Length: 274
Image 1 (cartoon, one colour):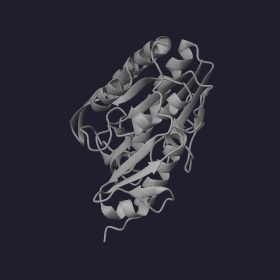
Image 2: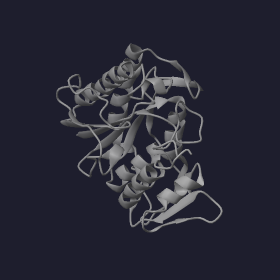
Image 3: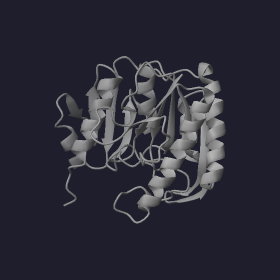
Image 4: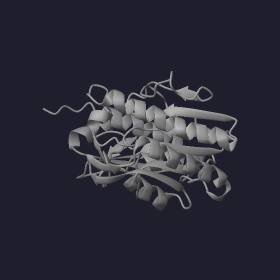
């Protein structure tokens, strides 16, 4: 078995706000240590289950958060920015299962630090179905015929995962009080839960179907202001829907839609506040 693990940060145990996930903030170093420890719990469980290869992709912000000197020595780590497929870089049809660790709810929804890729995206859609990072990444996995078997994070992303992927396993390490407050397990207790849930999910892999994307998906991104939509619309092939901040792109497949989403959101971030 080959296992792919994408590790985000906002859904990691005990992290309640942006002071833990922004590299220039006071709690960031604490956050990345807990993030690395959490990844290791899942990696070890995958190897204990019998995985012959575990590939880990650092999937938060500049994607250089995980401490490689502390990562399980038998795992391989993809780290750094820029990556053509961002949070799912390195994922392909050779994998048997995908695990998403430290994930959060999509933009506009209840959940700790909920967002979709950037602060500028209010909503994302594939063929009018609202999705966030979880959904988009699961669609890419589904393109390769690989199921997402486990999502770890807060209670809100757990519910989002269950609504998208029948039979998926979840590991809820913290409960949402507000966007920046949580009731959390301790890291040690979360480690026990993550190990149990990882083993359960990998044993159940044959019963969880991949999230198959539409063949020619329509990507829509609703931005928070029209200036962001104008920047995103600079990408050839896009259009702004009249009277809205929604930019639409007709993609040939989900891989093209994913790359297009990355380009559009990065362009949108260039909008000035002035």
